[in-house]
Structures are given as structure tokens and as C-alpha cells.
Image 1 (cartoon, rainbow, N blue to C red):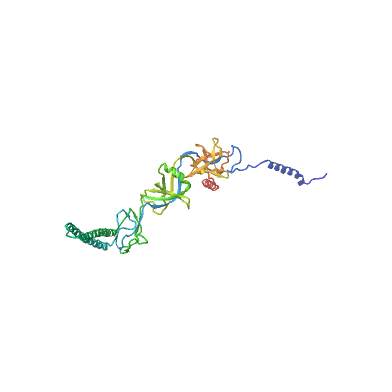
Image 2: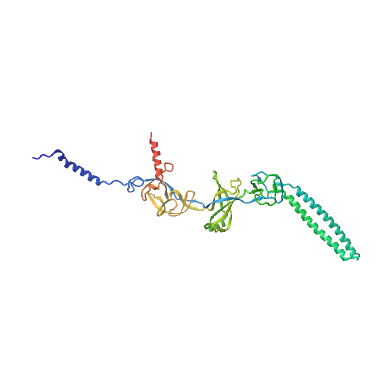
Length: 405
């Protein structure tokens, strides 16, 4: 009888057990995780948590946006029209002035003397003319009686006519002297705000001198905002402007984002060939002086305010096939629906094709959604699902912090 060692007797049994385990392992298939973290399956699988919205018909303005520059409606550079010493400055820098207010005064004494001299010359010419006219009347009667020759009478008449012309010249010189005296008082040609003063009292001011003006005055209200739009908007601009005045909103730079309201009052008669743009101007009351000359501002021109079908812009997804949204069916499953976007405005996407009014669409959590699979619509007031991985990580971190003692 041959005895079998103990280890060798156990080998067949151990081999059978290992083979059974191997076969059992090959028969089971591990679940494939879905993009949302659950296992793939039919409608009975885990639902993707999402936020939802509704496709609604709302008023979405049709607008053009641009960057504009503020410019005064009227502006003037004040210069002297006579030469003389600056006698008085009647304003302060940055002062509001009204049309006709005194700004500067040039020393008037030389011009006053010129007026008196011209008046004296004119008085002398008028006296001589009066004497000459008396002689003409007297010699005319003598000529009729043939007591004075015709040549003498014509000579006296010519002298009278010469004195008449001299009187007219004297009157013109007197008017010019008075005008120059008036120019010594430089007054505001328009209402507005003064800028920097470029002269001081006592300076010699020259008439129409080239260089910096005495002061500039800009009209601040009303005021223009000039901006350019691409030439392809010429046709809709013309069409909508013909139906009524177009509204323009301007937001000046700064912490206060409240817009200024105005109207489109100018459209240039030509397109700039170098830029392919059309120049427009809006007029604004600017009573609070928030708009300042040469300032840049964001301009919004409203062409119309139609009622259109719109959804939140966050619902729009983009893929290689184009833009689409996830529509939630009545059985709480998601349908991938291609859509055509007409335009975007302030967080809304205007839909021209692909949706109907009242349909429910996914607005957040699209990365978890699988077409034709169930979704779980969450309350927006609760913890909103995030489309990105970073948002999911933050939500998990907050849950862990809440559970921690």
C-alpha cells in the first residue's frame, strides 16, 4: 500500500475551490458608472438633479450697443477782438455763465479817446456840410439871375457833395470806434460752463491772437453723445426711425450704473469708408451733469421692443452639432432639442426655432443629464446643482462640513 503525503491529498480539493471562484468571478459584470455617478440602466436608474425653467413669451428689446463719446452741443473758444491790457477778469474757472454775462474787460481808455476824437471830426464835417449847403442854396438863386457863372455854382455843389461823403465816412468811423469800445467788454456768447483761464489781469491781449483762447465755454445741458454702428444696421435704423423717435440709454463710467435717457437726433448722411461705420448722435437733457464733454460711455440704442419666445441663457448648450437645450418631458425624462438662437439680451436667449411656449427646459446641471433618461428637478431655493466639477466639489464640501460635529 502506497501512502500519499498529506499536502498532496489536499491539492485536488483546493484546486476545485479556486476553479469555482474563478468561474463565479467571470460570470459577474461590474456596473458601468454613468456620467452622473450612477449606474447605467433604463428609466429605473438614478435621476440627474437639475434646475429647470420655462420657455416664455416676454418683451425683449432689440438693441444696438456701442461705445460713445460725450461732446457739447455748443462750444466756443473766447478770444479778444481788440488789442489792449486786460483790465478785469469777471469770472472764476469752472463757473456757470449765461449768455451775455461779462467775462473780461480790456482797458477801455484808448478806445474812449478814439470815440471822442471821431465824434469831434464828425461834428466838424457836419458843420462844413451845413455851410456848403447854405452856399449851394444861395448861389442857386444867383445863378438863376445870371449873377454867378455856372462853373462857380458847380464848384460849390461839388464841395457840398464832398462834405456829404466825408460826413458819411465820419459816421462809419464813429460806429467802428464805438464797436471797438464795446469789444473791450468781452461777454459770454452762449450759456455754459467755463474752463481753464489762460490769462491773468494785466496781461497784454492781442486781437485774434493764435494759440490758446482766453477761456473755453461748453454747453453741458442738453448734450450730445456720439457713437458709431456697423453699416449693416443702416436698413433697420432707417426703418425703425421712420416709425418714431428711437430711445438711447447711456451709462457713464463710475460706480453709479443708472443710465441716462435720451433720444436719437442725428444720423450721418454718409458711411465712413475707412471704418465701415455710420455716425449717430443722441441728445440728453443732462440736468444732473453726469455726462461730461470728451467722456466715454456705454451706449444702448433701442430699435424696438417686440414680444418673443425666450429662455434663460444658461439653458443653451453648444456642441459640434450646434446649439441645443434639454427639454423635460411629462414623464420627467430629458430630450435633447436643437434650437436656433436669434440673439442674446441680459441673460435671456431669444429662440427663433426649436421650442414652443410653455415647455420646461433644464437651466443648470446639464453635465449630469443623459438624453432620454430621468431627471430630478430641484427647488432653486435649495442647493443648486452645478454644471462644472468645481461646483460639485464645493457642494460636497459644504455637506461634509454640515455633517461634521
